[in-house]
Image (cartoon, rainbow, N blue to C red):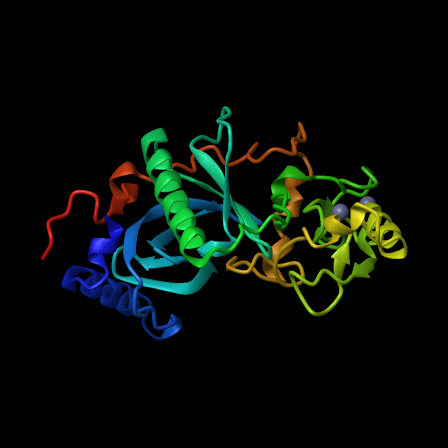
Length: 290
Ligand SMILES: [Zn+2]
Ligand SMILES: [Zn+2]
């Protein structure tokens, strides 16, 4: 059904609209054969907290960005090639519902839809696009994916030594291999994780041991773990506004937080977007040809 849209004017118009919403902060998106399959707002779990993001599903890429003015202006565009993507449904819990993981070789994160129906629609459409792409290209799905970062609020103390309490001075760090939140001394090693960076990245001591063992014994299974790793720039969630410097102030109140759960979400209960704003639109399903 999406194929019918390939050369349609409606599709061209929609893609122009997406480009204009991102303006000079975005990449050109109109390429031959590309179709805008759907769009909507999802809540993306970032390092500090869940944030609403505008998502555009194309038949070959997933694009998302920060909402500056709803339906008008977006920035901080991210483009994820769908060929690399694998989705993983997340179970509902008390605070977090309708979520799933978007995993790629270099970066993985959780997103949440407003309702179970919307979650189902998003996942089905994304998976359909991935299947079609892989079928056409004859490529195999990427089997190794980056770790999902544990959000800062979930770790009042270091997840490795279980001792260090995080403060303005004792800053949080993320292991790029397992995604754990760890203190400086527990992550003072670097390891080359080629899927993520050409430079060695911060890893926790536990992962360092595993990775080093795998390197000295390259036939070991553990070597495969190596490339699974993690995401992003040094200690920053790439689309997180709160960056270095001001970024650790929340530690003060996090100190008092118990119980510690390594699942997402002890703190942010009201993350649901207003439903009217989030209802996704998927094109092509019932659309007449223009
Ligand atoms: Zn530690
Ligand atoms: Zn680790």
